[in-house]
Length: 197
Image (cartoon, rainbow, N blue to C red; front, side, top):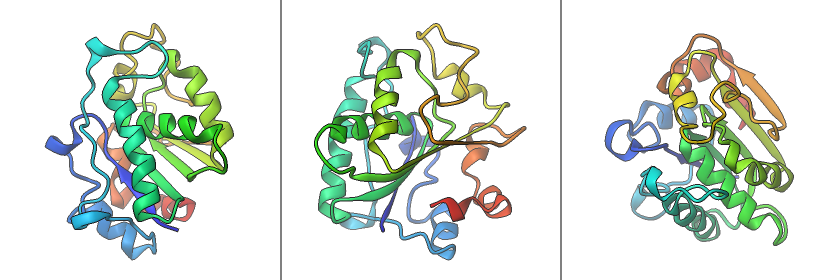
């Protein structure tokens, strides 16, 4: 089954770990993860904007909602209607919204969702609940030293309960790692995380 890599906020500009020329991409291929690259060998692309001032109380931002619809279309076009997803930071919220959209409409398009350092937004608790019921498996990888994950909950009044996803099926705490270290291919290889995909 194809796997889609989704970057987080501003990842298109600063941290292209999900691009085909990245170390993460090459390590995934070496570990027999079938990465979907879509049209023009670029993978799934979204705006990666946060748009805090446009935050919808229940569904995240306009950009996240648009990206969620695009993700579902991408899965149909390039992954034969179903895929695994590895999503970092707010890219995980995009994937959760996509799973929530599709949850009431039939079998899941996202089979195994792996969120990595995704901020847990209190205002999206219903999205997370439906997502947990809409995917076959949801693994949440997080760190006790990831301050960006905590800051990503800005405006939700939930600052100290930001690490675990209540509705994920399993959690993997990786102690002492920062936000971008969580998608280090060396870390994934050393801890055997590729086997989860």
